Image 1 (tube, rainbow, N blue to C red):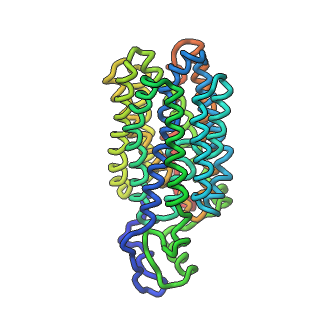
Image 2: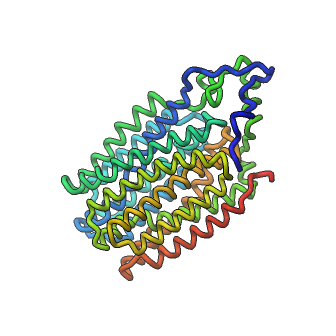
Image 3: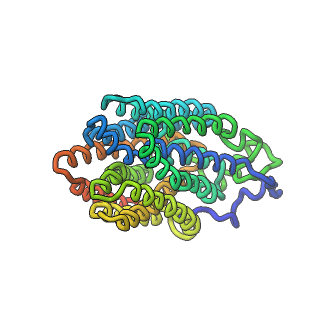
Length: 431
């Protein structure tokens, strides 16, 4: 499905045929930038950089690899359980107070990892953080909220938001390794968590709002002289908004959810342990941290290229490209043993994961509209995360048993191939 073009956007005129008036500055861009910062730092709170902590924590606490897998799964399962409720709360009340409270508690919980001494401490904290919706950059808050402020300009807005994720990671990866090397893993957790509190809470309280109508605005920065109900008719002319119940009765919803769920299972199996795997292969940790920063650079490239391609190709086709890039990244990760190979694998991963998270944030509102997108995405993320929850601890158990990640990672590659096939055959609902 291609996104609508602004050239035939019926939202450019009011219901009486009079031109709609565009403001000089649209507050939706504040929302997109705010979510970029929040999403980027959430991704840096023990998600993308979690693997950096595995070896130093194992050395001090004598944890098995599977413990970190269980912690990752606890975060995923927690997000799956909490996502359904959080999605509905976002639709009804917006993210302002919700994200300030849940995000603040989640970040403070990350800081508490600095004090753990037992395996269950790590697993419990990660489960709590997940239930609060702090799963990563593509969490229930970011894409769902931005989608409510844009229709025709949604791709540009999502691009702005997703630029924040790699820009933060460019600095977060080497910062994490620096903190671990210079001050220890406990201080690193403390600094990362407290920084999250200092970013998420004030940004949420002072800058976030539920939707443009609450501020007397219309989607995409248009102002209308007509009534609220007439404004809604104009929006519906651009996209139909499905209710959650209607979406759940659609085969399209379940095909999308299956494809991204299998992808999550395949990705989590590799992304958690890849940094420790590279170190086990003899690659210097500092080299790994700087190679990891290239993931941010490649993600920025992916944002710009996807912003160009999304108006020319179907979103399903772009998702298939993302799956293929992820397959290439995982395959190289399995055999990588030099800094160059690690860098190439990381670049491919950055391209792939950015394509996939952006397409997810675009394809659900493009297919099902913006009015109930929080509730719809809450269900889809919960199911997808449920499918992916078992992969991380299973990978840890296999590696502890036979000394290699390869068997499970080749299965992950196969799951990504199935995802590419399923998404490629998915059609918009009602067609």
